[in-house]
Length: 343
Image 1: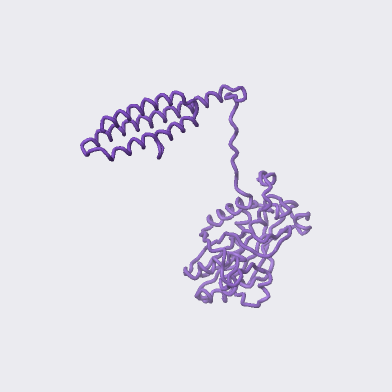
Image 2: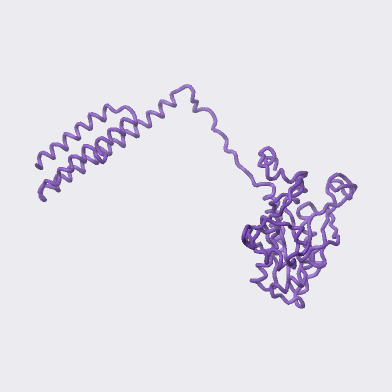
């Protein structure tokens, strides 16, 4: 029985070599491999007979079977490599392929203009000592409004009409002031931070979109004054638009700051002579700001008798429109590569 199996294995190897020589392409080579090494292949059929061998004869036949299997496997791999090389050589020999032609250039992308402005703004504030913090985009009503001195049914909520999630007291945050509250709940003064991120409001026109980006800032410490606010924001605006730009502050209203102000910068297009960009006024509105209302400090456990602070909020799309001379904010989100390639 042992000798019969050994002869079968040798005969199988010889027959394989003959079939391998006749296999002219990859598909036929794989067929030959399956015929001999597959689950129902010829080698498998021979090995089934090993169960009838004595324990003394099995090692000899097993070693021979492994030798034949390794031989077949190695021959198939070598033939496949040779077949692939021949196919490549055949393609290279065709006139339709010229290996002397230059390769296709790799087209590199670049940052979106809004991302460029956001990164530049963040860098400017970090140079002034502001730490960057982030928070969740899905927020609760408390951190979005209540803790910012905007109680339920307050008319100030209408200015930030928001996307609420069905069945729960959760919403898409209308500003990144929510991050300021969360940081103040965990960290005691002194605190100097910015909160960049995506925010959501139900607005849509040439200067508003339902989703946009903000950087909100906060500085809380002993002795912080409106003069510090003016100094920080003046340095920021001039760092972004040039040192020749002038700034002014106009009284305004925000529920979480008192006093509140709008920061304007002198029109860099007409040098305050009046043009379409500044609507003939010579000034361009940039951002809102103010001293933190003591009521806000009560929600986070700060002692308003010991510390003061200021806050500001900046729309990144508006800055990008001013920086790049864009008149329609919606262009940022239309994914027109012809537009984006300009930046």
